[in-house]
Length: 187
Image (cartoon, rainbow, N blue to C red; front, side, top):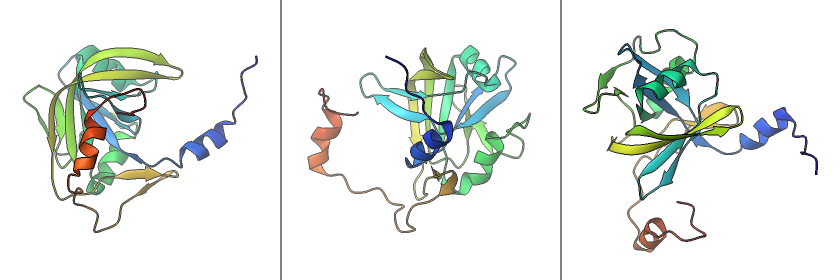
């Protein structure tokens, strides 16, 4: 059976229909300097053990340094951090210039003003075509309140409704769904 031919432009257009949040993956390089890159390919993977994943391109210099460090932070960007996303998505040599950040207790750079931060150690790395699939073991979590996420949809930044900045109240009917794993659950 031959491999189907998928047009790259159509692939991007179709996948652009899936709205994603935007993260910045950060770490300290071997010399102790902060490094990072903007990343849309991020997801929760497992509740037990707590694992997340992200997918850097194989040619990423930042990823090579993050892998060597063995630990990283996933900074979930807030709506106000669009300039931060643009900076970390660029080829600037010092992406942290003019960006407020601090070093966490676990020794990774954390961007101030992020909606949430997930600090991890590198658990494993899997080949994923022109990207790697990096599985991170969660070590620490934090979140802020009162802000909205920075989203990407159809090749551009977008947002959510202005009045949708408060999490929905916990629903008992979702408790079982979110905490039980079976062959047909996604989380």
